[in-house]
Amino acid sequence: MGAERVENSTQSAKVILVEVQRDSEVWYQPVEVNRKAHDSVSAFIIKEKTRLRGRLKDLRTVPRRDSRGREVARKSISEIVASREKVIRSEHLEEKIVVLEGKELKPVRLVMQEDFVKGFEIVNFVNKEQEEWWKFMKGKDLLNSLALVAKVYPQGLGILQDVYRIRGTMAWGSPDERNQAKEEFEDVIRKTREIPQEHDRLMVPLLRVITEHIAKLSRP
Image (cartoon, rainbow, N blue to C red):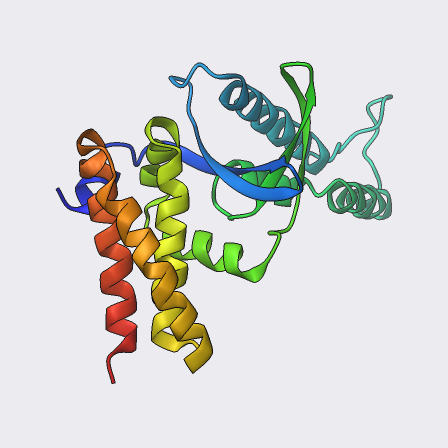
């Protein structure tokens, strides 16, 4: 099965990256956001998107009459618009909406209270390597496939990222970096051989996309 066919089965769902921190390490969990998911993160994101869209709409709806029904002066309208646009910018409403809609790839850090999601904030990637990896997969329209891997075979995410990083270093790194990468490559190849057979249909197409992409860029 090609990676495109894997993606077509889930392409209607939006994906956001949720920052996960544990033992001083930071990584990102791709999460599908749709009403059929029935998980607390999806439910929160859907509710928050609706709330933010409503607030943006309210702020952009400028009254033409005052409370006594009189027409609002053009100068007053201009002042109202400027004031509300300032609020929109200060609350980062438009940025939050496009991130929660999956249109812009930025990680979100969830604010939790016990097992409930109480809020979120948009954060930066911890390093350029992570940012490059996720933007590469988004560019290939494979975030939904990664979200499925994260759900059914979580360790597969690490394998895929290692293959991307190591193959890239072998192709473009310094001589010392390439030698180190070759040693790491043996270990990651062993991990790919240990992928359970039931997950081959997800992992093999994604591994192929990475390998073919780097091979194509490496050609003279």
